[in-house]
Image 1 (cartoon, one colour):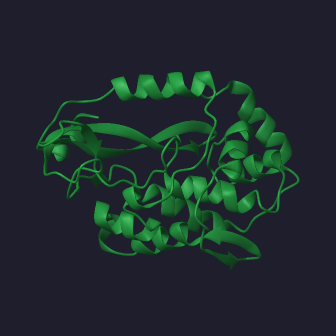
Image 2 (image 1 turned 60 degrees about the horizontal axis):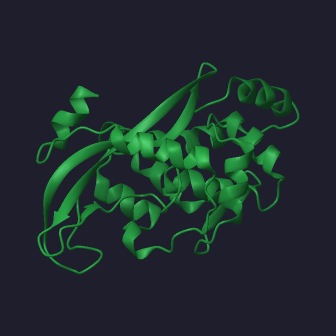
Length: 229
């Protein structure tokens, strides 16, 4: 849930921050490249290693962007599978860290910027880039346990390579990318990445539960699910 006061607070603090428009374009294009991307690949059950079969496809929030000052949720589609051996339901390989509410490139950006900025200024800088993340979430991501994030310096700002790689993919056919390309750019599949050690607040757990219940059962045709959203 986005609190109305956040946007006004960001706007006030952004007056003290300046970043080149080209850098904003690179970051935004990297995140927007993932909008509507379908992640539908999993080779085996992550628990027992057994074979899996398609179960359904659900919409999952990847980021919240600012469009003309209005928060706009950006989603991806994640296929789920059921294990034929142990029966658990598991997600396809996806660019998310366990226990987070944003795609891994957004988390990477939070962590990278907060290495040199206070949490509130990291949130303000990200808002200037058109990405909505509140200060508490920035703090949780910054304090989480992750592998080292590869970065590159652009215009004097350290930026995660995941965002740069995603942005470079948009130079292809119409700026559209596929799930395998997004996973490679983000350094996934997620099953092989360490999960962050994040203390989730009760309201965050509630949001996660609500999001989990808001899904479409569409076992074998995720592209149809995309058209319905």
